[in-house]
Amino acid sequence: MKTYIKQNEGTNIVNGRHMPYKCTAGKITIGWGRNLTDKGVSEYEATIMLDADISDASADLRRVFTYDEFETLSFNRKMALTDLMFNIGLTRFRGFKKMIQAIKDRDFDRASNELMDSSYAKQVGNRAIKNRDLIRGG
Image (cartoon, rainbow, N blue to C red; front, side):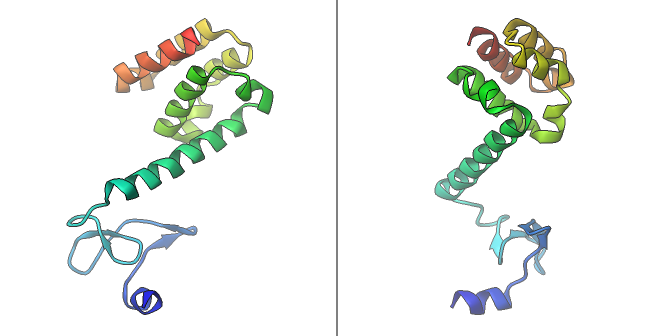
């Protein structure tokens, strides 16, 4: 049954990833005919996507920091950095060169100040303040 439906439904795969597209009825769709416009995703499905995205953000942090640099951070600092990576992605995260270096140097006051001296902080407001406090306070 699944194979038959996949043969009959469209999909939009770019670089091995399913990307949203408009179906023939003009609805935003993903995968093999999942009508996001009318059906959306369930709480369970959204949680699976969130878990996958958090996992990706954690993996990306391990591309920026060595094992010791990241794994020896407190839970709160890891949480703040994961939230930042989740929100802005690897390319923009790497642009926080001074903050990254301050974290590597274990200068968390400087790191938190560098976080706040960014367009990110202006754009997300309270989210940046919470992450600053987690980085600073440990």
